[in-house]
Length: 139
Image (tube, rainbow, N blue to C red; front, top):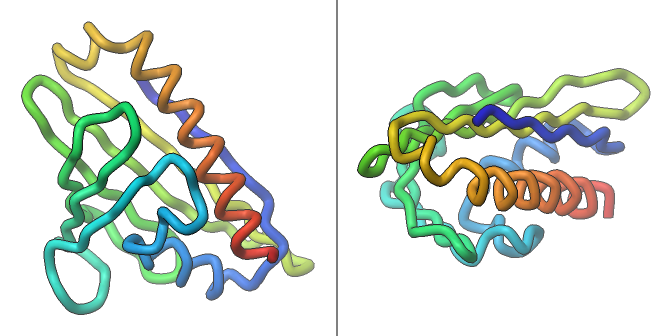
């Protein structure tokens, strides 16, 4: 499974980035997240870990594997038979607009078995997150 959702947001890229990397507050702007707990201290970046609680999905620990300040981050979660990769990318478009693209990919033998159910939930959650981020940053 490899899915993406984009949103055009009329806000400063620095403000959008600050909202994205403040992962513990995601539950304030998207219904796809119940709670995020940082498992380390300090600035969010490579190696940062967080425990993410979402409705209808088992709790997962995510680790940041790629980080380009102000532009993008990728984090990965691995569980028995499933490897999940989530990307968060900002691209300034000019005129005060930033394109934000959220991506999600899942691989592994168990991922293939649960694909149809997981894909439906993932599409829903990516849309909720893109819409919620847009509302939060434009409001």
